[in-house]
Image (tube, rainbow, N blue to C red; front, side):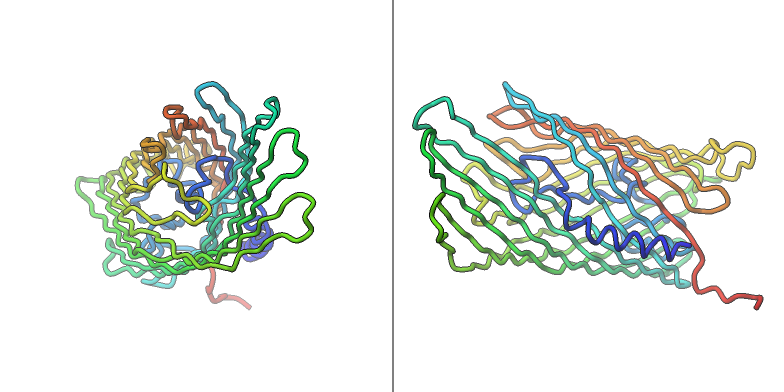
Length: 409
């Protein structure tokens, strides 16, 4: 059954991942767009905390977790988001539906492997500076779309019953297209500039997870992962055209090297497996070199990224036969992020709260997960935009046994 689900999902999502516009944020103008992947829904619903060696859920953030899988696990997730964009004197609303991730994990004794497809970043904005009521004034319109996806393959190994190590390789690829149109009120002609960038690059990630019992049924869980700095190559094309002119001017193609910085993620938590967990995750990333020739600005610079999250889960009684609600996993978390962007000397921060629940499918280890996220990003100070957002997310985690020899003919 799980094999049929995987084939159908891959066919659908391979199309959707390239066709979708995964953000409606004006801040996606900068760099390679909004960072999209925040972990699987199980982890996102806890603010991003991912410290437990889970045997039936994939933890894509740390490749060492694959060695703890007991069954083949396929997971896929998506979101529907709404946001209110506010300046000091105006506001507007936006919404979008997005594919978030697709991955398959396979246990192999002391080893575990996983591979999948993840949108890494998204560009999606439309900004209009309209001065049509002023004769001779300049009117501009900016629009951007696209983003970067990544495919990954990872391998985990269980050194000891309570200690895992792992690594994965990631291939990043995508396309970003931006368009700017400039015209003058009461003048028929306008100038259009189109920039298109093809991006590609490799990066690597190492991870380890360790747990031990510290008091009766209570255990300590720890997680550590490190992503190496890498280069994202951008092949750029630029075309300028004027209304009524049949021959647009195409600039010679150029190459730009963008820097994806190293990242260190540390997590620690305490709890009782399949009962409750409280933990925290801290992430620190160096300042990158994301600016391309079409989105650089004297008022913009990049700083070090950091994230602080706290969250956990609670399962009343996962073995209950009499009460389905006792087998539901209830999750919650809080997060604070400095997203690494400074505009007009203002750091752009993201503060949010998450809630979620995992609903088991009767008779299986598979489950359906729902998540809610409320938050605020940016500020109305210094002429900037504040985003108040709400995301509703849905994911499926299917489990099955593969490579098991039948005992009967």
